[in-house]
Image (cartoon, rainbow, N blue to C red; front, side, top):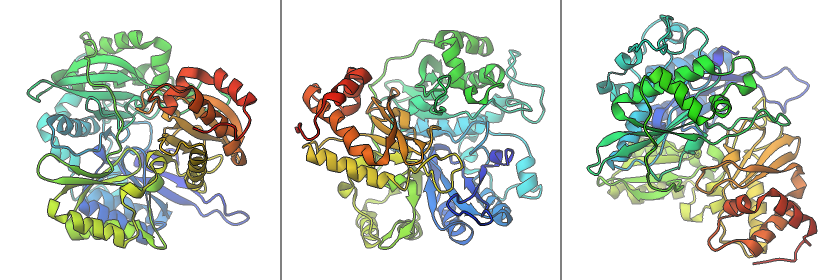
Length: 550
């Protein structure tokens, strides 16, 4: 089962079925660089989930779909079908470079085009090279169709760049995996690419974050690079922690693939292989400090890394609703509650998406916040698309509660073996309760970025949120406060073991202090970060429930 993760799959069982034989099943995750999903691939996933899965699809927080409920006997059929249509599950899990993310906005702007293109370059550069995948799932035959993203970046001669040996220890003697070697990496490795000002993908949570830098003519000059982000931690183990990435510097475009190889080699050779809980690259960067880590990378790179270039301030946007793409086409962002694409009574999102794909042959982009974007829409089709969504019980984005629109939750129970309590299934009720508190205190216009996970591993990136609930036991959560509304710093733990029934009495004092002491236009997360845990705790102890409203 440990090896199977490299094939994009984990074995699961429904933990709520007790006293019976365990219903072992498999979760299968796709690798979709830049989150792109062609219409033929969506049709296949829709059919596979209906015929060989549990009937729904789950949009992840790394811009890809995963399928649940696949039985062992069907695994080969599902994986081979995905590979033969030009997609893959290889590297979606395991101690390799995971799905490379980018801003999901499909603008025609040159910088956005570079971000999409280079995310595919990095995905192809760090792909596992072993033939084991085709040997197992395709009986040794080549896939019927080459991975779509690899065809789109052929002009970069990525294989040549991968195999280029500078003599500084990047390329290993292993003939199968010249970058990964025979042990792969100490832990998973995550990469994100975006443009200045667009932090819709939580760039600071990645092992490597890359920001496209263009000149005044819109031509690519290179990338600002950050390193050492990561979310996973373990309760009651202070040696594990969430961390936002540090700025490493600027790298010209012609040196970028070699720089990426140098960073990967630094983690491969110096990351902690003895203690798996401390094996992510964030711990190496934290231990060395970013300056010493830069020196380590430069020893592989062979030249100094230039200073970080100034650029536009970060903003957060989920890119939901209708947008002008900039090339005469439109794109539409469809919010998906916690990423679950399903039919449930009058709410028939899964059917609606299939109708849209079949009728308009639409290409999708998965968003970093578990939602979906349709791109390259002919303006004349706008009303028809809206009509299909309304006919299937899908609300327009204007009717979606901003709290729900900003939120994320991991799947957690019943299938995740690591979950300590609920997340996806209970998040809607938590948002309703937070909404009720806000309305009662006359804060109805306030938008707070809220996230929830069923364990401390951080799949929904809770430690970047303004307010987060992190499962720490049955019906119990840690409360985290102080993340940035533009996702550039980590939050801090305010409370452990908050009972599910204590949400209101926990949040009201914090919001009352926010009402009384906030600065002009100050966001909730920024306020909590400014005043700190001790001040909030002191205020909460002396607060009388119901005594403050805006």
